[in-house]
Image (tube, rainbow, N blue to C red; front, top):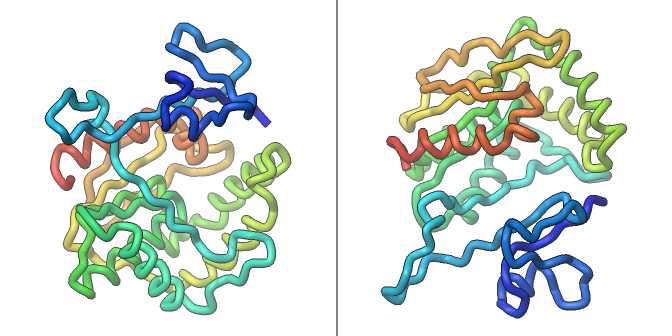
Length: 248
């Protein structure tokens, strides 16, 4: 596993939580002190000072993020039996994770279907999200989906051979989710929608077709995979700027 380090001062609460004494995790006093022994460096950001003192300059760039797991992706974990069961469970999880403040739903690829379906449910329950963000999500039922999925599956299998977290169990679960969403058509949402399109396409794949429902769109660097890997920062900034310009 790649080594990681923490940027800050040893002995402070946040730094000692991330790099406990004796753990071997290096602590760097400043960016200039970082060396090649840590492939990833974490910079802990304390919450803004509410006592009237100096405010955290990074606070305006921070957004609270909660990850809602899709059931069925862990080895031996059961898949949802029906689409309604999935949407009901995810809507409950989303509402629990975002009990306070405006809520934005984001989904990548087929996860965008889940985000959109959950947004529809929340709107019907009077708890509409502030916005929905679809990251390179192909429209359901797209006629060329087989060709696109074949190319993406090849890339996923290549990644499964490189990273333990992307094993074949995940591909099996994805097939189950495609079955759940067979015949599903997204309904128009009252909240604004952002479609984040990858500038490049994986070998053998076609660009994602237009999302037919009303939306804003932004194109970011990378392909279907790398837009959230080496290009994750530019993707996140594009979403952050769109949210800040209107919805949230």
